[in-house]
Image 1 (cartoon, helix red, strand yellow):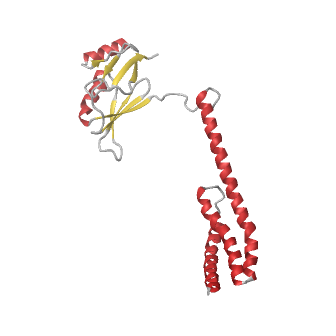
Image 2 (tube, rainbow, N blue to C red):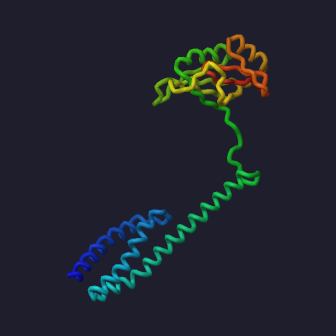
Image 3 (tube, one colour):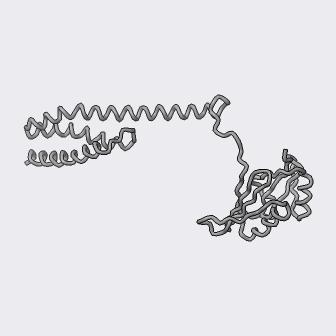
Length: 230
């Protein structure tokens, strides 16, 4: 009875080996992945259970299969161990190299410049104020741009001597009546003093800061500085 049950279970296990072998042959996965251990374990168990079932049932063919399958299982296990070791060593190498790049000038440069385009968020009720701010007070062309998926159209300000500023409108945007302690953006002009006077004449709030003489707050709290063009 026990012999028959062991043989039946072994046959079921062998039947499941067929689709496993076919799938590996059709779509071989030669790179290492942690999930490969889900293949390694049953491959080893096929050899172990075949030895046990062959001994219980006295069927030499099953024991012969176990002897043939054992080196196959060992090879699969070694390949997985090599892949795991290589993954660990590569991960350590990337980590060490990343530390070296972060400490000094010897590593490869990742960032080389700051872009000339900026993107802001503002509340919808600030649209007209911001349009007037850039188009009328500061003399920059302002365009309205529709983007799929955005409930509100954006404002795009293109500065004559380079760079652009896009403003996206959402009710979740920060909105302040005082200078916002966030990222302050730099504008450039041929005559910064004259541009600052234009901003003050337009009613914008001057922001005092020791780093630069010309700061003003746009509607909604965003702070801009005005620097020389060259």
